[in-house]
Amino acid sequence: MSQALTLARPYARAAFAIAREAGALPAWSSALAFAARVAADPQIAGLLGNPKLTRADTVTLLAPEGASEVFGDFLALLFDNRRLPLLPEIAGLFDELRFEAERTVKARVTSAVVLPAAELETIKSALKRRFGREVEVETAVDASLIGGAVIDAGDIVIDGSLKGKLGRLQAALAH
Image 1: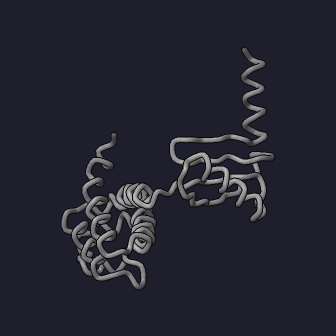
Image 2: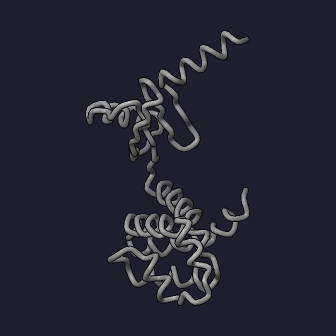
Image 3: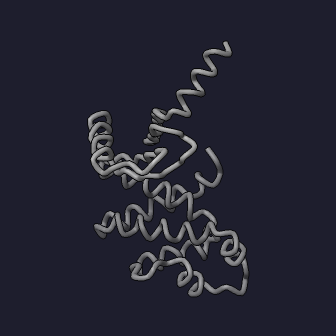
């Protein structure tokens, strides 16, 4: 386990406890994702280390519009403890805790072309049966797959792409 994840875990758990108590898991998830994207930007990352940047300026920079005061306090705590670079890890761990609590699996479906809504619903239903949980689907398009799709759901990857099949065929023929 990386040191960043080890350092981020207590902050993610604290954020999760605060958000669950407030009944604001989705809002916190969105706010953390926003803050993580901003903090991960190379130009912003360099700025965050600048000693001239105040705590209030940092919170204003990282908090999305409409974020709760408590979320701002959380960002201020990260600023005080010099843990702002951990925001991407904190956001990821927070989402893992959220999906576990909500009994939801997050799946990414990458296909060669944009999939019709009916086909996505079929995939979502199949994943729901397989995992016995609700499924949140995110889609992406990668023309290099040639055809088919790759489904990444946590620890499970299902490669039904033509590119993957050709790769497996090539490996089989090489041996």
